[in-house]
Length: 246
Image (cartoon, rainbow, N blue to C red; front, side):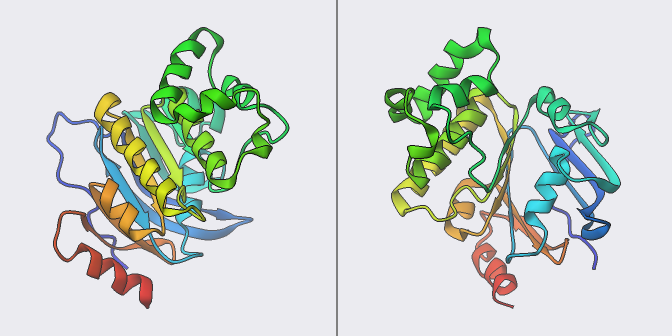
């Protein structure tokens, strides 16, 4: 299967925020993602959609260094991050929002935030949290595990935003959430891009959310890109649904 182009042509002077070239990855020697390529320009929001088991989460984990790269290259703002461990990738300016509620359940909201942000920057981090999710400032002493499912998802996003990451990898942030929380997250994502120029690669199954926040989309099918386009194209919704319903 030939992967379609997943981004508009860049000028010779443009350095992508994220460039993935022929990336293959998987588990225990089994290839799940096969020679995937994509490039995100600074400030771009890209949605990767697809049915369960198609390799979407594997793609993000491989980019972030949580899974081995069996082939290919990953660059962040021109820096080769292919062989870097996750903590070194994070220091480059990449944040990761896991599909699982990857919080320290027995620690407070504040402690979860402090673990992600260097001490001198914590006041600025709290200001960022206040802009995105002001209710969390009233919950700083509350244990993260006692938050509702939606509140924990918002804390995950707040923690990533608080780091000041220039690129966010966001995995299924809307899964299991009620519409009002999804709308809130959409607003936060738009605002982060508007205020900071944050680039985002979103793995999603919630099609209306993806089309509302992303500039471009791509469908991953059995570890390869099957289709891609701009969210503003009038047939985007129908094209994606054709892949998701097969």
